[in-house]
Image (cartoon, rainbow, N blue to C red; front, side, top):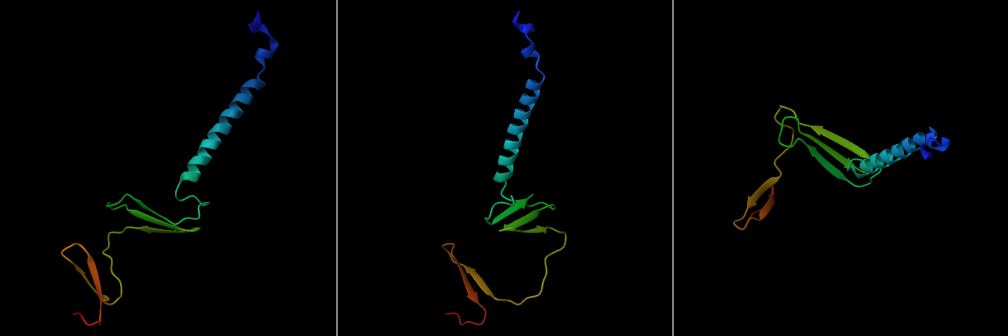
Length: 105
């Protein structure tokens, strides 16, 4: 009777199978983390827009190891500055920027 052999009842085999399962899960999680564009190990620059066009829109900019997060608010954007020039759209769709203070022809 093969099913009564003592080596088939070894409880350590179940533990080894659980360890193998956890190693596979950890490997999958590490691959998922490395594929995330905002992972801390990537040196590339990335811009992520979350919830575009809604009140809860958030923009995250990653440049090297620096993260900057911009969140939308209900207020209208305002700031200090001066007019820098004028932009014109031509009939063929091109845009032309004319800086302020230069003569136009």
